[in-house]
Length: 355
Ligand code: TXA
Ligand code: MG
Image (cartoon, rainbow, N blue to C red):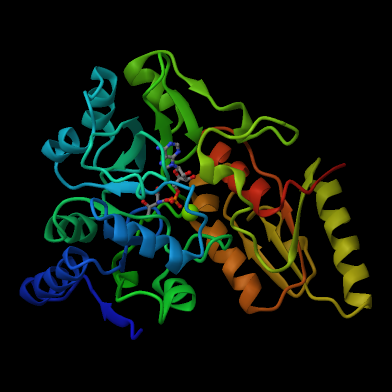
């Protein structure tokens, strides 16, 4: 299949932008697939109400079909069409956080096919904050099923070039909005399951449990999110798969900063002796003290949003640079840091050295 790559730039005149988004919407309505930008990561979109489209998404990603898709909407009225009884607490959260990086799981209505929900009778819904995404969804008929636009197992794409790397030849169109993605969050939305008595966070993200609790009171967190040793399966089916994995072997190193720097430099030197390339993810405070083939600055130690924005890009860059071993400093689990550590631990297959 030939993939059309269409670039959308902020300075572009409105008419040409709208024409492109209308064309992308038509593709979705006709059962095709379009990758599009959101404020978190790029999504791989298809018509959420068309079972064949959802099947195509699984095929294009190489994703197991028991792993449900998020339905993206652009209008609050559309929520009631795909969900049975929107809970009051969900309305409150939508009021505060939509459009934005929050996904809510609710009981699905009959119009949502089982292919979209991976056989579950619940559906995940989110209204993204990216203006181009909202217009695209409206043009596409209002309901766009979209996982992250990476091949299954690879880091989610934060830039169109990575979508092209993974999806060229597999889908109809890629909307490249890299020129307009300033301020992107860089990791996927927070997922909260609204179907139980107490809402439960299944995947941490930019919107933290604290922020959610402030709006609706008591919430729980799925224990598998940060626990290395949990034997329980995670409640979001997708969280059980190895994810975000770079080609190189990633290890997280935890300890006092000086110890961490010394340890990582020792390891890098050992690899260098064997001719193996090493990459490092550090913080602005420590970055000048490392010696390795590729050194990435995640930002200041207390700036977890910066780490979130950069993490997946770093993992993709290490792949491009053929890095065989990657060492990352450990980050704070406060606020957005919880989401950063959750993704980093998964990318590392939970390999963690404690000094
Ligand atoms: O930020 C995001 O959420 C991005 C952008 C494109 O919107 N999308 C995204 O989708 O991250 P995906 O498919 O990569 O991750 C969706 C996660 C999976 O772990 C899946 O198992 C879970 O959501 N999920 C979806 N529907 C669910 C349901 N009904 N019950 C439990 N988990 C669900
Ligand atoms: Mg994903």
